[in-house]
Every structure is written in C-alpha cells, then in structure tokens.
Image (cartoon, rainbow, N blue to C red; front, side, top):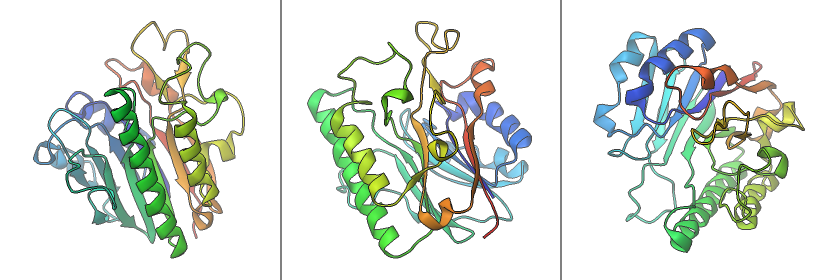
Length: 260
C-alpha cells in the first residue's frame, strides 16, 4: 500500500502536475494540502477519469485539503474538521478518512509566522487539538497515519543553514515540543525511520534561488501508529517534482507499506 502527501500550492495551477504524478508513481492514496479552492471547485471529475475517487474540504483562495484514493481503496470520511477546535474556526485544514482498515488524517498545520503572537497561539492550539485526537485514536488501538504539511522542522538537520531565522515559528521550541508530543504518543516519523540523518528536503522556497542552491526544509511528514509502522518499507520525497515547470514549492512524499 502506498500513501503519499503533497502540498500542491493551488490545485488550479497544479492539476496537471498531480495527474501526471499519479500516473507515474501510482499511489493508492494521495493527500493534498493548500488546494486553495472551495470544495465544489475541486476537480473531482479529472481525478475520477484517472481512476481516483476524491473528497475535499475547501476554502476560497486559502488553505484546503483533499484526499484521492484508487477506486479499489474507497475512502470513508469521518471528520471534515479537527475535533476539539471551536466551531468559529472556519479554516480548512483537516480531513480524516478510513481506508483499508487505516484511519488517515490529512492536515495542513498553521504556519504560525503571520498574525503576530495570536497567529502563533493558533498554531499551538491546533497542534494541541491534533495531539488530543491522535491520543484518542491510539488509545483505541486504531491503525493511524497523520500526514501533510506540518510547517515544522523537528530538528536542526531538517533545514538548510541560513534558511530560517532563529525565531521562525517552524523551529520555535514550543512548536517542536508539540511535534515531540506526537512522537511520544507512539507515532513514528516515517521518513526519519528510513533516513535517520542528513538532509531530506520536501520544500524549497521560491525566493533567493533556494531550489537552485538546494536550500530546503523538511516540513512535510507522515506519522505512523505502531501497527502501521511495523509495515513500513520505504519513505521518500519525490525531489524531481520541484524541478518541473511551474512546480509547487513542496514535493510529494510517499510511504510504502507491506501487506498486513
């Protein structure tokens, strides 16, 4: 089973990129972030023609998450917003589904650098509610994958020197502590399980020649519950996608799981 995540930074601009990658990489499930369109505008029919069913939680011009699944791996949507967040929170950042006995949460975690301290507080609150949700699912022995754009570099090795200021929300101690909480619950960082050290970038900024200079970040993650982690075979970013014409600033990251 292959599960992938990709912040596409606008599905309108990257629809053909995604269709091409689906044909090349053939994931069973692809989770998308920053689709930047309302739910009804998501190109469901294009992906259906490629053999994938889809569901989306959209928002005009900002945020938005979606999940694509091969028809033989139908998705059952369980939540379209993060449990525990107030009803007043209308940001489209969470989609939870079930497929093949696994609960899969697609997330677009707040960046935390905009909106001053209030924006950073929102990031921390969101992470606290995510950890609460993960804890509840793990307590029920639910096979679980949490995947998406976490907007966190967990360790110093997860960003190229000079790419982030010391006070950036992606590396502030409070952000990293909440990421560690997820790991301490028993989740496995799939990429680091396969590649324990060294640069494994998933994002290169559009500014300052970051791609050309290979000044990247690792902020797109797949976290696996123990029973899912036991099946982990591979976990890799598809670096070449960043070099495509009009590419997203993120690349797909895919894990491969053995049969249960």
